Length: 123
Length: 123
Figure (spheres, rainbow over the protein chains, first blue to last red):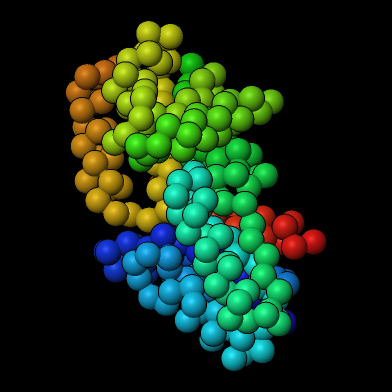
C-alpha cells in the first residue's frame, strides 16, 4: 500500500494550511491513482506534522511512502530540514520504504505546467 | 506583444532566486508559446522587482501582461501585496493590459499536475 505525502512548509495562518489540505484532498480524489492515501503534512507550522502523519499511515498499513516537498526553491527547508526529517523517519520506521521527490520548483514538468496554465488563463 | 511574469516572493538567498530565474528561462524556451517574453520578478527579496520588470517590458513594446503569482497559498502576499502591486502598475502604465492569474496553488490543473509528477517519480 502506497501513500503520497505533500510536504508543505505550513503557515501561521490556518486558512493557508487549509488550502494545502484541500489540495491534498483534490489529489486524493483523482481516479486511477496508484496511491491508496494522499495527505498533506506540515513541516514548520500547522498540523498534522510529518512525524504524526507517518505514524498514521503506518498504522493504516502503508508500506511505501513518496514525499513531495512543496517548495518552489531549495532554501534551508529543502536542503537541511527535509533530509533530517527523512533520517528520523527511516530510523523510526525501518520497514517503511521512503522516497523523496525533487522539490516542486525542480520537478521535470514544472516549466511546461506553468506555461500551460498561463495559456489556459489568457485564452 | 504579450508577456508572462512569474511573480515570486523572492528569498534572501540568491541561489533560490536563481532557481526562479532559471525556471522562467525554461518557460521562455518552450516552443510555440504565445508569450514574446517570459520573465521572473520578485516581490520582496531579489531583483528584478515587479516595477522594474514592468518598465523593461513596456520599453520592449509589450502591450499585454499576464501575472502568475507563484505562491502555494493565499497568505498576505497574495491577498494584499499582489493587488496593491497591480493597482500601482495600472496607474503607472494605463495603456498596458494587465491580467492576474490565480496563485499557483489554486490554478485549475494543480492537483492533476502534482499526482502526475508523483506517478512519474515512482515508476
